[in-house]
Image (cartoon, rainbow, N blue to C red; front, side):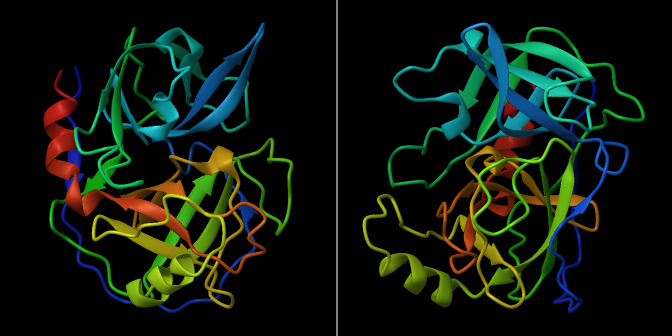
Length: 257
C-alpha cells in the first residue's frame, strides 16, 4: 500500500486575475477522482474525491451518508479527465466518516473511503498532498477549485470536461454574516473548521452540487474540500469548504485502515 503524503506549506496572500474557469486534464491534477452514484442501470457522477493511497480516497461525509446510502450505490472513478468515462473504476468497501460529523450542522464534513481493489498509481493517478494540521489560511489566498461542475453563473448542466477555477479565501466575518442572513437555508453555521471562498469580484460562487468534495489547491497542495454553498446563488454567496488544517491528522491515521 502506498504511504499517504501530507505537506507543510508557507502561505501568503496572492493577488492575480480571476478566471471564469478553463478546461484542464487529469494529467494536471492526477489526485482528483469522481464519485459515481448508481441510478437504476446507470452510474452518474455524484460528487468528487481525492486519491489518498492506492486503496483510499478523501471526500465529504455527505457524499457517503444519508438515510438511503449504501456502499454498493457508490463507486470511484480515478484517472479520467471526462465525466463518466475512462480511467479506473473501483467499488466501495468501507466508509470512515469523521466522528464529529452530524453534531453541528455541516461541521466535520469529511470522510475517508476504502476501495475494494487497489488503484494503479501512475501519471494520471497520484496521491494528493494535503495541508498539515493547524495551518490556517489567510484572507485573499488564491486557490484553484478543480471539478466537473458548471462554470457559468446559474448554469444547471455540468461540464463533461474537467475544469479549474480561480477562487479566493473570504474573510470569516463576511462569510458568517452572508450565511446568517440567508433566508430558508438550513445548516448554515460556519465554524473554525471551515473556510469560505469566492470569485475575486463578487466574493461568491454559484454552487453545483456535483462539485461537493472537490479539492481546492494551493501550489499543488489540497487545502480543503468543497462542502456546501447555495445553488442559484448567482455568484453572490461564497462556497464553504472543510478545512484540512483541522483534520489532516485524522485523515492520515484513517487512511491506514
